[in-house]
Length: 322
Image 1 (cartoon, rainbow, N blue to C red):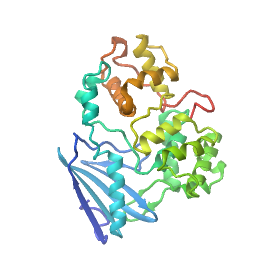
Image 2: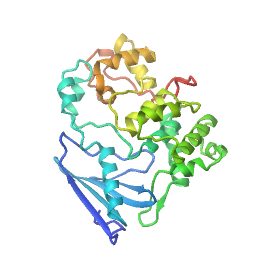
Image 3: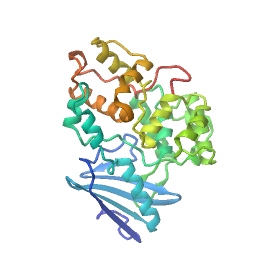
């Protein structure tokens, strides 16, 4: 961050972390909020109303630097904690590795990519909002919707030129037609606004999975897929996998039958991942990596499946779809 336009910020906090398990910083996000610049990841975060410019730098194979510039130390500290969560740098994945390095399906990928992490969001609202926009839609189209929302409503820091995720209150104040103007389907626009209002008003606490889920499920089009995406990418839980995901439905169908055109149903996908216990979510990430890298070991038909072409969205059923 030495060339940051925030060079004169009153707080420049740096924390060096030694990950307990092999780690590599990942790529930027398709919505443009998180950016990869050389060996660094950079993004703008807000702690309350206070902007914090963040950078994550892999300084050595076993050392990661988290740097924050802000107007106050508490905001810088909170932003670093959020980015540590998002990157998974503190997660000790040795128990997963020891259990599944010899797994007949994902073992090759586990051994070849021990550094793999789930791509998380720094705040659960970000994961929930984007999961709603990604329901039953192609990935490229969903990313374009997200980029438009960020450009139009994201909080901006003039010193950095970067934008943060639009806060719930901002999205909740919009008319459904305004959201539809960004190519969001009508039902998804209503669901996003409804969820934003509930979160902004404090009626839904997204940090509490057990209490948040029933209230979110009461919102039309928000179903199990959306909640499992929230759990995996926004709340840091490894024990669930979005089983209604079209990508998993196709991939598990191929694995279990050897037929490249076969599709499993949602119950079959859940049954397939039961073997991974409390690590289902991470196992799903490895299954995708194994398929993409040709590292699947279950059957010849499953070694190199083609991408599904959608944002791993559930089948078009009102309740299970989300």
